[in-house]
Length: 177
Image (cartoon, rainbow, N blue to C red; front, side, top):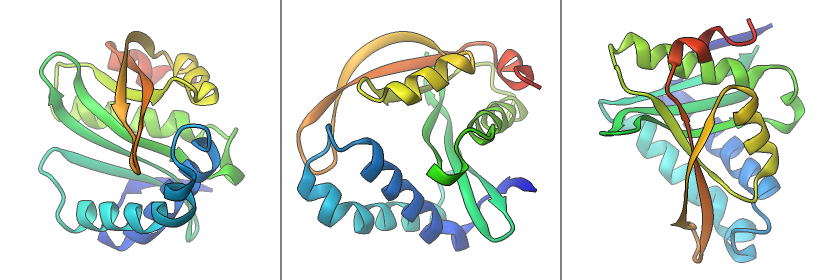
């Protein structure tokens, strides 16, 4: 049975590994081979260790667990942008757990947390334009494409990215239930 709960500093290593594995799997055509083959795991471990041991006041990390197995996680920063609201900075589901509704439930939990913080702003995220599977998922859970830009990649270079927005968090939370 999948359990959704707030992550803690003890989860930093597992979150970092899942994040790195997701990038290794999905971003081969965007990020440099050197970064993905030699740097991504140490980089993500440093990022997540820092985030989880020194969390920002506006940060929330939710994890999906099956027993002691991390199935997925999402990280949200409330009030990240004055127009677009709360940023879903990361949402990753383990390859072995995809297709079971975990991503949807993590998005819904992120939306619920934002509402619980009395935020009247929307929820948004950036996704690599080339990540078609993620884009299709975000559209299925009600995200609206509002902007295209470019962002620097870890390890060098830059990639086209798309901003998806959920203006109605109640609709996100109740969708597919």
